[in-house]
Picture 1 (spheres, rainbow, N blue to C red):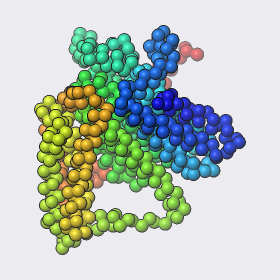
Picture 2 (tube, one colour):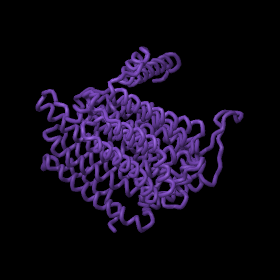
Picture 3 (cartoon, one colour):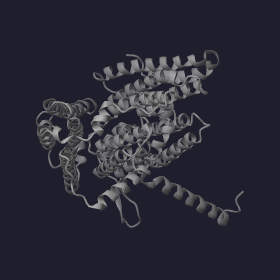
Picture 4 (cartoon, one colour):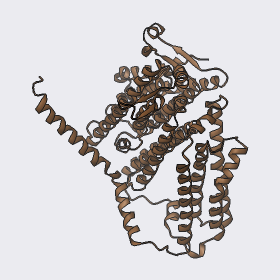
Length: 577
């Protein structure tokens, strides 16, 4: 087996060689970065295969320093989770390097851009192979600074520089809580090495009092997990720290794609890395689920009001990151990694395609013709084309889909469905909602023969539902092979009964309402709605289009804080030099 350090070493050497050779090689220096990522990807693939048969790899680079101070324990810790992340990071980075070679031709700072690409890839690889929480935090910080430099690549464009600075400030705010969680973990448990930290957290029951007199108590593991989660919120664009992501669309398109290699979705990795810690706190997992669900709703709603292709993709990413955080909050940590990988590859390709579309639009600035699919969806469905067979098939499948999913999950995959495993049940609702969306989309395209549409609906049901189940099961077996570990996470993430019932009922009402609306629309009928509903829809549209006016709120808050600081400075600190 090749030495794992080589995976990190090649991108780092590429980042050093590119600026040194740029004066001689010119734009050919991009080949250095492409070669380095190719080697790292190949070695990462070998590591994944090796870890299917061998225990995790732990390497200490400076053992003498580690004995003096545990914070200086530099090294590598590569388990199956890290190995999967190595393949994703190097794979997406290689694609971005190849794409950028042509995309950024004749741009000023060409060599600097490729050097930063290789350097941030190195930082991401170090992040996912960190042996303890403190080293992970160091590279977590470094990634934020390097992303700032990449986003501000075109320093002459004011909006680009402003968005990069907003991103940096948002990261620093989340990292402040992250650092507090790191120090609290060390204070309570005396270690930051992952295996020892998890062992001590599981065997030590510590309760903290937030106010004098024991007015409000909280478990130590809950306090640590929530503080660290704020850091994950900032990186993964969770509400209310989500505003930085859409503004980064001013930056180079390859950077937008690279962010899906482990930057914007690093929150999912962090929660998985600390899964044994989060598995000890049902309060943290429940709050994570609620926040992820709310972020998903906001991201999807704001996406529908955008008229810019990259911003639309950016808000779509916010919604998908909300899904990923929801899955972690449900205890489905392995499924979150599957979502992480699938979305990273898919959305990175979409961003690169968006760059090509933008280039072609600039070259041929005519009004783009809508695709045939868009024309079909935009045209009203004639009454004579209405098929009760299609409507009833979609409606009935949508309603019975939860039962099919639950039976398959319980009997085939042995997923727990008891009252203590509400998280597992809601995880299965992801397959229901996603399949229902596909079935509704297919129904609207009923220009084809009825039986073909019905067959497509059933195929979508089988494909999506069982893809979720198989992916969740296989990734769970691979990432969390210990018997009972995944079931323990589901049980810890069980929601309160009232919240669980509310979630199920709201989802059912939404699905049924959509089918009723489609039925009336297909028959040329109108559902009686009060006039205030239309006015409310317009207000919500404007509200989501303006991002809930949170930008204005943060600007005013910042201005008030600065004014307060200036007043305090003049009144009390005037004597300071």
